[in-house]
View (spheres, rainbow, N blue to C red):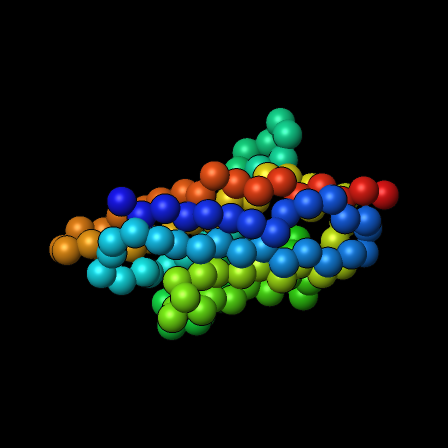
Length: 119
């Protein structure tokens, strides 16, 4: 069983920065694509950014040029550097990972971390 643990959320003022981390642990053959998603109250969960095992990234238009996704494959950890935060960035942020164990491919969600941007 693979576990994903997010950290780094909190309360920040408009224009501030936060860095989220997502650490993967457990048994797996390889960690494939990983991503950050967020869900604001009353809204559907939406994609924020993804990163492949090779480092190719993809961002939602709403966070381009403000957020940076990265990963340290040696530590099985993914990061999300969030700069120039806006009130509309307030949400619970979830990490997701695709991984392979034996010959099977699985997906896993973290428990989420709250990000609140105050004006």
